[in-house]
Image (cartoon, rainbow, N blue to C red; front, side):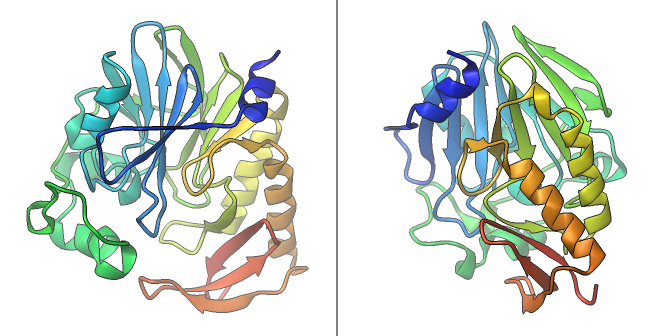
Length: 288
């Protein structure tokens, strides 16, 4: 049985943990999905266990104590790899000492300067973004994303060998200019960040671009035979790789004018054109 069959055919199991903010799904003996279901973003981070070290892909919104959850799942030392610099993906970076990021001016700036309390409040902590209660021991007035040290800066096509797991770094802008996917070549899994997921892909954000998104999908299509499952960083984990050609076709329809948009506004006041394709949608800047 291949890794793909194992991951797709076995129902993830809920894992009971001592925490009132995160939910944990055991996808396999070596892979856990840790989600924030009561936040509007419904961010998902992944904990991947190697032979003597664990890899944490993203660190979520910084609400609650992610490190305490991780330590309930493994005693291995942790290497964090961030898919990009949106705050809902690195909010708990300061809880970890070994961090890798894509080498881009945005990530250099954020790691050097952190993020202000006001920015965190606007992006992540407003009441309309969270289903109460807030987690115990979390105090909005004391929350912060301080500067953090990056132990390795990554570039496109870099190879990471962490414990006995081999990754390929793939630069995939379109939702964010510093966005990358991680291709786990050991287990044939694509950790897709924010560009492959059930639901909307947010190319209307600052630095987003549907043309770059389409180019990123084409880049991934050239490696489509190297993975069998997709692990998105929002909503539902463990998706079939048929998500990729679906997103590619959708981006082509947006760029060609074949798809017709509906105008909307997100919770942060940003207007967008929404192109709906059923299972997925693409949000682009308004006006296009």
